[in-house]
Length: 310
Image (cartoon, rainbow, N blue to C red; front, side, top):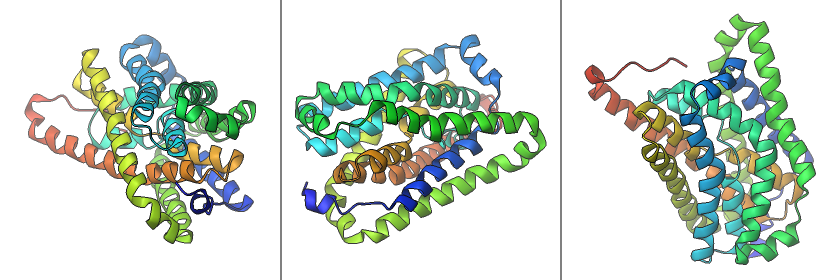
């Protein structure tokens, strides 16, 4: 990809601060319903969450590294795909799991644990898998993203808002019950508005790169859903758990990838484009899949057990 074209994707300090604030707001909202018991649930019923975490932080990054190596994808685009694959599950995976009438408890526990694990695993996995691909290794060394500062950023936009959200939800349960869905809906709207404004400011650039990048993003997202589904099938998880794992792996926190790139390497245009397109597309694909599951569940209603409310 033309670096002059890609480098036009820049973000002002104020816009960068807004992006990080949106991510923190989203994490706070999704954490209002979290309780310490959700983490304990992983220990009581570890198979489904463990399957999802292995697929999330091992299988998806590994497969992304191998595919980008095998297809010799442009190093900058490949690094963008690898970075997205190393991020934890997106904050809207719980909502989509609920819409699809899958196991919400499994989804919530996976989101909580993966968000904490991402503090270390996201920067470490990105460095590992980016260096394993010989076509991205040199580019990764040129970028030299600071791992320690990446950890601080992940703590700021994921771990701390999650902690504050859990504390708020525990101390003010009535407020949490009433506002949780408002936070989720508001976060989705604000994030989509942010992406729309960013793309509109660089519309000509986005149009020129959309064809090749969008195809990669769609294929990569399909691979993520496939890995989640196959992992659940191999472990013989119940249908509700398998679908929760599938959604958690397929909905990546691409907003975190954007925050990392805009903060530490704003000139990495192709990587920014990949993460930005992911942020829009996985919402479309996730909602579509959740809707399909919902229709299937309605057809199978007499044979299916009711799912947990969100």
